[in-house]
Each structure stands twice: as structure tokens, then as C-alpha cells.
Length: 191
Image 1: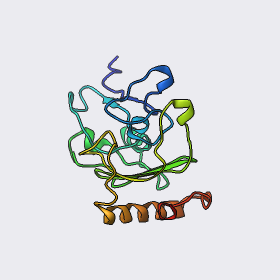
Image 2: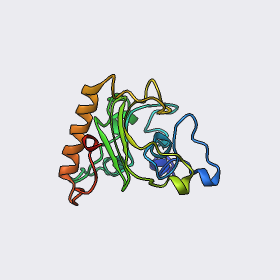
Image 3: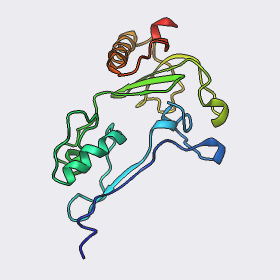
């Protein structure tokens, strides 16, 4: 019936693997329910033979938020302004292989992180899911470079205070736009 060629197939995980069920996220640090890369970085596989190039690998910074705009584009619809995601078709079709988010944010009750390019600012101010997931959370504020240190074992805050300040400012601007008050969550400058 030609359905395969007319169907956009997407496979994505909702979070990293969980340690209690013996998932291994190495070389990434962390586990499900944490904001280390082992908890947030997941595979994304997109396929539509005859419409999209095959056997293509991209390392662009994208999010599950991008599925709505991508699905709308695939169905010939426009993306509403309230959508936070970006359309992935420029990456999938090689029209713009560098297309990606400039900045992405994550927040839980005990952690928050922001990623811009290779840099990630990660703050931890409580136990989070560490007891359940059997993951040790370092308490404090950490600047990571995910290109040179994907295991998030090194802190670059002292060497790059300007990047730390820039990411802190981006995070504070993002929090100010959230519809729910987060005033009880300490910022990196309050440590």
C-alpha cells in the first residue's frame, strides 16, 4: 500500500537508563531522573525511506520538544507560536545540517541545568532521585564542557567565569518567563 514511504517513524527514549534495572549509560554520567547527561541524553532515530536520506548521523542539540513542530511540518501544517520546539526537517533533509537549539534548559525540584553548545551549567541543591537511582549527586554549581569531558567529571567554573555568568543569566531569564513561581529554588549565585 506504500504506507512505509508515507510514514515518518520516530524512535526516542524519554530519559537515560535507570541503574536499578541495570542500565549502563557509560561514558555518560548519571541515570534516569538526574540532569547529568546519562539521565537526559537519549537516542533519536527518524526514518522515512524515499523522503529522508538514510544512514545519516547528527550530533545536533535537539529535544523531544521538537517532535511537535516536526510532525506538523510532515503533515503540511504550521507550528503554533506557543510551541517551544524547532522543526527538525532542516537537519533530516540536510538543508541546514547545523540547525539546532541555541540553548536548552532542564529543571527538577533539586537540580537545574542549562546547555549552550558544548557548555553545560548544572546545579544540585538536594538529594533528588539519587537514593532511588543509586547515583551520587555532587552538591553545588558546576560548569561542564561536554565536548572535552562528556563524563562530567571536571568542573571548569574557575577557568571560565564568563561562561558561568552567561549561562547563569540565561537560566535566570528563563526562570523569570516560567508561568509558575520558582522563587524557592536557589540560584547559582546563592551558593
